[in-house]
Image (tube, rainbow, N blue to C red; front, side, top):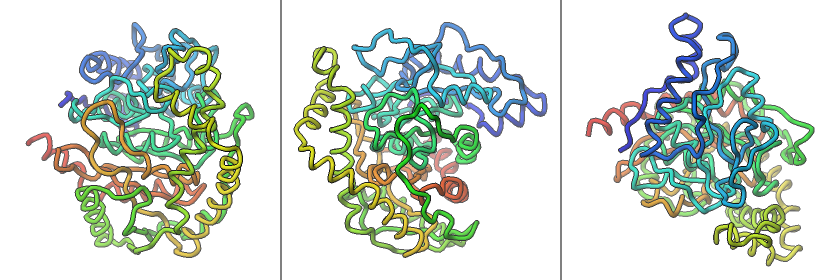
Length: 445
């Protein structure tokens, strides 16, 4: 198992700075040292500067002293952004991505760039799972999840087009959040599939995610792909309600017994603590969404990356060449049909969640269970893809360990544009998972 650092949470950093117990430079330098020290074993970063980033922020800035790791599909003007692609080796963006500029303006220090699968698709990088280096950390936001899980940084940026935030967060035992589609502008973020791409956040605590979201949520006129998700009835339930739906059949398929047992234990604990747990069945059309998402992604990836594949196929992985080929083979009518389904299906799901069942969230699996052994396969995204396709917010929290001693998570899915309410509920759930006790037991084993 990789050595874990003891990085403070964002809340702890802010409290220490306010009390004068530490300086901005101390937190950033400590994170930089931890990143350098862990790199040989963890391989979370694809780029670290020669020295710690400058710490010019005033200690009262909202994210002063907060070192952030940035997935290498998100542009940084002072660091390379290469997409884990030989075709883009040495690429230096002219300006920061919108989200990076927003973080810097709030006082955050961009520590380095984290490993991604090539173009945020399936060809993996060298990052290992912090809990056991023989297992994948998940993908495509592999390095971002690992850097937070290993205690190097309290915050990291990722992207999700299928399951690339929620799944690696679950595999690494941290919090991962995918907001409502369009909540965080994607200007300066490499597209994989514009109908599905989301910018997401990794942290150790839900409270940190909620705090950062308030600082970085926003639209940008230069983002060519505006949200297709209507506001609907996200506030149908009263503030502070805890009516949670559970499923007998997961949208992504069968899950491992340990994952099901973890969800059952959590639901039972939440019921004991006052939540209303409701057994529900998903609308049948939701089970087709993983396939819909794959087809949208294939066509849009072919448009985005097809020219590169044609020009320099030797510099592109077989995984991306295959995805482009799949997209080109799909009939235009098939793509148009799925696109025509996406918004009405999202609207129907919104009504089913907030009106038919009046739920605050669904409690679902983030993955089949523990991460797969080896680094060649980053796991099945089908348990996240429905919520990505529908554009609704989703958050995963760690809930325990499976039989191989690797983390298990639980995913909460909410109503579109109900991000703040979902995070408030997730923070309440987080306090009832028993995760901290499980970590102590695991490390003592």
